[in-house]
Amino acid sequence: MEDRYWFDNSLSDEGNRLRLLEAIADPRSVRLLSDLHVEEGWRCAELGAGAGSMAVWLADQVGDTGLVMAVDRDVTLLRHMDGRANIEIVEASIENLNLPPASLDLIHTRNVLMHINEADEIIARLIDALRPGGVLLVEEADYFPLAGMTSSAVFEVTSALVAKWTWARTLPNTISGLPVTDINVTIDTSMMRGGSPEAAFWTYTLRSVEERLTDSEHAAANGLPSVTQETFDEAMRLLADETFWTPLAAVVCVSCRRE
Image (cartoon, rainbow, N blue to C red; front, side):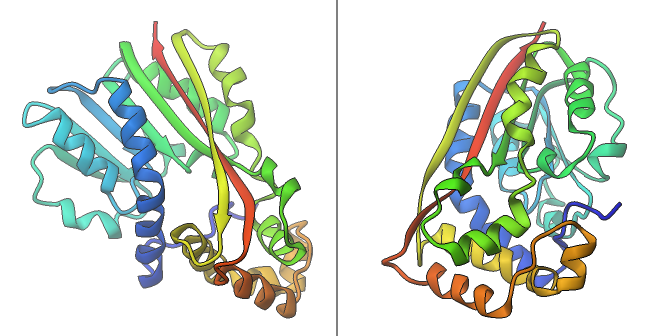
């Protein structure tokens, strides 16, 4: 089976793409984590740490007596944190990550589990890795707003990549069947404007996989719709157009505490 995650942290443009994502998503993550009252001395895991912004924020909250494990399958973009004594950089896939039972006070993931086939099983393992009262916060994108998109070109191009990312809508049901309390679910969605930071993020994202999206043989082999170069170019034009607006993604945010 082909890897569902198509992006490579070692590429120069991936750093730019992830920093745009941080600028868009970090304010929401900080707000949600602040509401969970992260404390000094906590042991935390930031899974899918990307370029490291949330690992750094957590490290500032837990202080010198705490620890943040920053996990990514490619830690190229995390090396700027090498000097932080309270950050441990771990290069590993989440599927193969071994977290000892009842060892962590907080686990945070964002836009990670949506790419993994065994996401439900991993959620159960993450709950097991929390201490009693420990907190899990999961923020994962779901693309049910695709149905309301205002451009057929942008719909064709983005849906070729994201239409199968529908796992997040099932997350509250999965969490409810586990030994947890204080389940809280919110959905963050908005209209995307052309020329905005969000549109720039999607431009980087789609450009980085352009060959896969416009290669009809690749699309057929992976059960994806074929996207013509003309359609792709029209979508890129609209993403740069400040008069263009469309819904695109929703982020399902679920937090809970282990019993």
